[in-house]
Image (cartoon, rainbow, N blue to C red; front, side):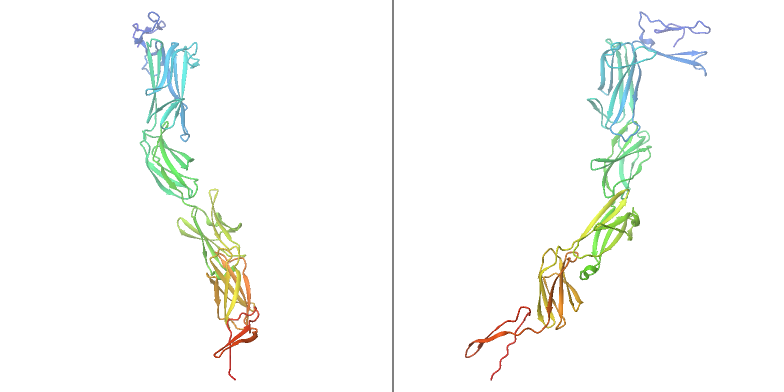
Length: 497
């Protein structure tokens, strides 16, 4: 205040006219401590009159802190870790000590600084006050520690920094400025899955008070890779739908509140998106005895997040097939169906169901296996005038056999068995039969082995002789017919002369 008397640092006159003066007249060349402060010069009337022109001036002795500010605070809260800068600018006396700290940890400390030599590395700023020098400290925040270079300090909640400047060496005046950076002290709670599809997850959490948060950051990871980091502005906004995810993938999700910086992370929840393709299976529709007319149904269950007529197609042994048969099982699932046939025989069928969503193809496959070859050593034996026994040996893995027999170019029957022999009955006497045997796993083998049998009269025996005669019996011996006639029994007749 300038009341017309002499102050420690400032002398002035009051009144009206052109002879008013405000001037500094330090005693013994140094300003005194009681006069430190901010002064106003108000014209043409007192400082409380509206429209008065006011000039302010800060008068101090030795050194003063012109400003202590935070610069380059992040606006994009998704970038991690966060970096910013502390700037402390001193003015006045050119020999001093200066430090910046958080709590009891000094982030930067310089002693016996002498501005003409710039021995402390400050930045000289041009300005109306001599020896205006700025000092900066770069800070990194990882939500647990603030660090500058090799110096690190753990902290939670608001970050309170201090800049201290004192004239050197006597510290006649110690100037202190503080600055506070707002940081949430607690994490949002009750992070919960609300809904999910094949490509989206909706989560919510308990919002913090507006005094504790300006918004939130939701982080999504898969394994150790960050998939998404989304900033949600507004302390009351506590729900978000995360888009563009992969189907059937497990994601770890956390949420953090932010003010000027990010706060701690919530507990992690794991959510798996719905499968785009739930399953693929095959069913034998008709009997395996229909051979290359055997029908198989392939069922592929997909999510209803896609259009089955345009987003689903098939590959059958590399050949593209469109999807024309589908039904809705429930609100989440389509059943897509394809019918296939074993043509040609003996070739395994690889069927792939492909579903497209969000520019990504999802696929599942099923293989219908055919044996590597037919049975070996197929043989037929006449049992009687209307029956034949057929047996064989297997040449590869198989689940069973199909036997087809024809006569006169007409298929009489096709039967199946899991044994390595079969009796064919109710045949026509005196007929020629072609017997084909196929093996199968899921599909029949590529070909069969054929045996032709004739129901006809055997050739007669030859070389009939009686090598031995006794009082009670005789021994009869003969040569069997040729091998093309299968004889099941002989009839021996005798008569008494």
